[in-house]
Image 1 (tube, rainbow, N blue to C red):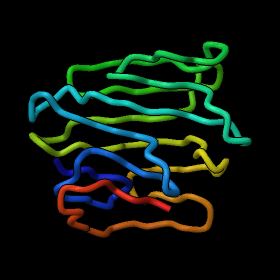
Image 2 (cartoon, one colour; image 1 turned 60 degrees about the horizontal axis):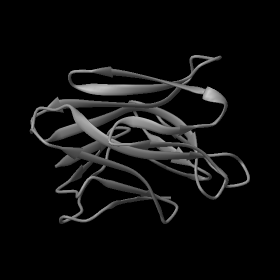
Image 3 (tube, helix red, strand yellow; image 1 turned 180 degrees about the vertical axis):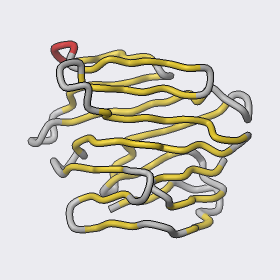
Amino acid sequence: MDLEIGSNIYRNTDGTVEVEGVPQLTVTLKRPDGPPIVNFVTFDASGRMTSKMVESTLQFNERRALELAKTPTGLKLTHAESDKVVLHVEVQAPGHVVIKQASFVTAKGHTMDISLVEWKVEKRRMSGSTTDVKGGAVAIG
């Protein structure tokens, strides 16, 4: 599967995204055209887990702070009060998944932002690259 994260294309991934060395997001496809099956965790600034999504279902959602909306080709996780997007994942083509937008805290307490043009975490940012990860995980940060 190919993952597109902030205009960066990661080819031949296993669907895992490691942020600052910690697996924080996993996307799998039962069918090449979707919907994506997403596992994802969020943290607060001190590194404490605040939500956990397992197989595209919120299993833990501290203070019901997040809302999950699903479509036939993706899902969007937003903050209930601010409507700010935490994670937006879509299947764009068979075997090609796009993380359209995201803003969440990593396990190390840093903010990870993804837009259509780049990803950035701490002082690192990347846009417009193509990488073959040869069946492994995407490493960010």
